[in-house]
Length: 315
Image (cartoon, rainbow, N blue to C red):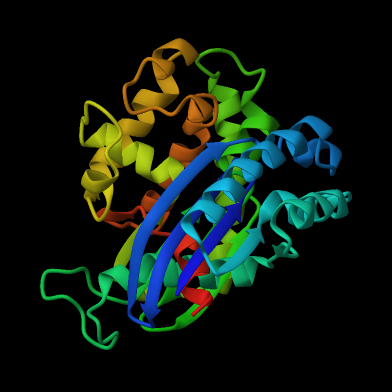
């Protein structure tokens, strides 16, 4: 079965075309990502901006061509934080339906968490999900998906045992505190970001038994970019990044570097996607505070995430 999974988040829209012959095997055919900043201004206005919608639809039209070229037999479009929060989300739904011929699913935070967990952890398990790879990290996993508008915390081994989505994301926190805070950002602005993160982590601690986790698994662009910098890669390399293990000290050091750099200095980093330059500081700071708060010594980085979970869900 050849499927096409589309994840439309606050910062990016992504496509995975994959062959899924059974419940244990997923073979990637095509993986694409476009940063469209769909959630631009949503935290302030509560609405999706017309120009943000058009950027998103333009990327999706390109994806439609790829899906047709590869002959995928099923398409699922999932939208997350920005669309959940928007009063005019019907405009988004109408545009998606026109492009793909399917209704987009605006998933809840809990559904987003489940899809992220499945996508991230299948590759950490044997073909039989009850048995870990001998060299692999140990469950239970705390999967943390740092998005543009929200961050999902999901605890589980074979199945999810606790989950919460909180409204801290790299775009949301940048727009709220860092956009006009100087270059590099001022100490009071960074303190305001930390206060928002810590308040969200208070809610996580009350709802999810994080202390049960043996392994922290980090997902999405903020985490993979921090990993690429920590690994000192000459260019962004998904194969080197996927399942890399980054120490807590490396997370802290990369976060300090990013928050002390100017926009231009971040822009010149060889692993930095242009669409992440302005939001990577907030994203790294979210990861940094999670590692500190829950005293993890390292993070396992995954290139597989909600997009892969969406693909698995179509089997």
